[in-house]
Length: 540
Image (cartoon, rainbow, N blue to C red; front, side, top):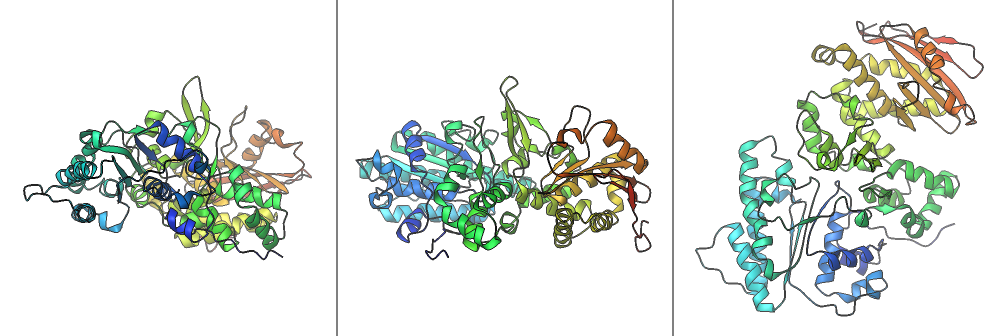
């Protein structure tokens, strides 16, 4: 039995607290030393719950000269001076900064705190946020003889949450623009500055006066500055892996694979460096359970608002190629790809060096499930809770090869699709949206419209023992769906896989909004039909 207890820093964003309380810390200080040695002004974009706050907290401890906190860490091998600098830390993710009024109040409150700390006296004529901040930087630097360090966390919360409210958005921009302009105006009094957020800053005019920020979000050297790499997973979490293996009565190798499938897959640069979501990974080890933690942490409010108002075919987000410029842009109702990438629903899958484009993908199983639960209320007409329950059933049935249970659950999902989905879109688009939501719901290891030489099957699902190739036909026969699977050779890539291959053909009726027939072709080759009782189906 495992007896030693490891304290996982769940919910702890303070580097000092982690180090003084003996919690596990994944050493990123080598990258931090490299960062501060190369840049003076830095911007980093990462999805929510990805360790940005801990990174800034670590920088704060470093610039305050708290040498004892870094003993045994990589940076202690290279650092010998450990000088102390004045640090101004602003956390704009707080609820206090969610509206223009609260944002201004919070900034003035923080500035006043540092004024009192350093004995700064400001005349009555300096009342604006930008003016007081600039004077604070200059005064403290001259008084201490040191350059100031400025750390701003989640700069874009007030921007993202008011992006549909133009008056509030304008007021936030008017407030933040002179605040950030001090990063350039007071350059000679600044030692280092770092700003983090979810959205990329390049198109926000509030940074027009701070164009000296170096955006490291896509730089390969800092791909893993937030998140947990595969090597770090093995080094720092070996005991947690062993504990999960005991809990699930499985091998440690199998547990690592399950952790990677569920929480890994994020990639932020041209370099083929993947990282796990630290928020979910830490909770999995702390709870000794492979749960759905990213979704329960709170879905992106901006994304939910987008789903409600935009007329976008989400079935098109699979296999999108995008330039870095596009991924750094502001999103709009016609192109949510920047939003999906910046909030973590999509990440980099591949990089084409010749075209300088990135192929995007859904990072992992946990995000796939979250995306399904976000989309289900709008496109399947069911609650997130009901959708989650049905998704679990679908996965369980496929793992056990209970195709009758799978078909009936799938049919019950489709039967609840609301009429407006068919009214506002073409029937073809509505059909593809439904199929895409079903792909997300299945979520075992499914590849929706997996590219192949002779076309794309609608869905390919992989489990430990089985491979399911599923083709839906809109207003055509289920026989034609099975015929397409055979004629296009969708099963060929998997013939030597060793797992049992099941071909499934379904005929979808746009008029009645249900599946009319399900035909199953097992490895034996003999086709049979699974009948669905439609008497309780309002569309049957």
